[in-house]
Length: 163
Image (tube, rainbow, N blue to C red; front, side, top):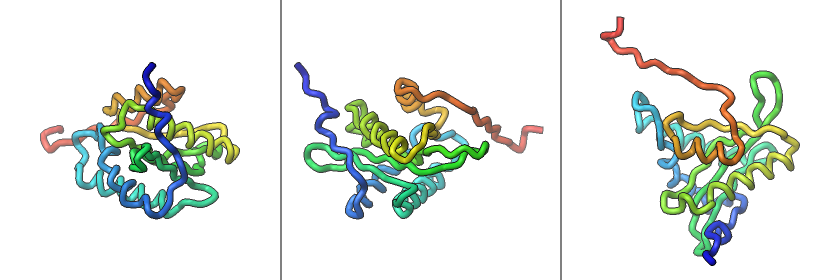
């Protein structure tokens, strides 16, 4: 019988010494970006999101880190309070990233489960997140875990020859 790789993953609250390891995962959040977006600007924005999530840790925001049996950071998730445009309060997953060599080992599922537990413990009955339309693997992952598309954002790149 094969061992469950996710069993070797520990999900725990972020601590300050995790900062560099978590920021090192920022490029994983650029997978599937639209070809008309500047990759450097996108990566800078992602790093800003992560830094904001870390600095916002408190009663309304949490960051959890997944580490393997060697103590290496192999993923993280941020979740916080959000208000939908309808005025309904909900939890929002700002970032979920898994190291490339840990993909498919249950790390993302363990992180998502911990984020959902935080949301339940905080009294929320909805969890929302965003992912890139071209990130097919992530979209399939979320769908398998019960997430459904609620809206679709459409963008058109305008060129000088489009008149």
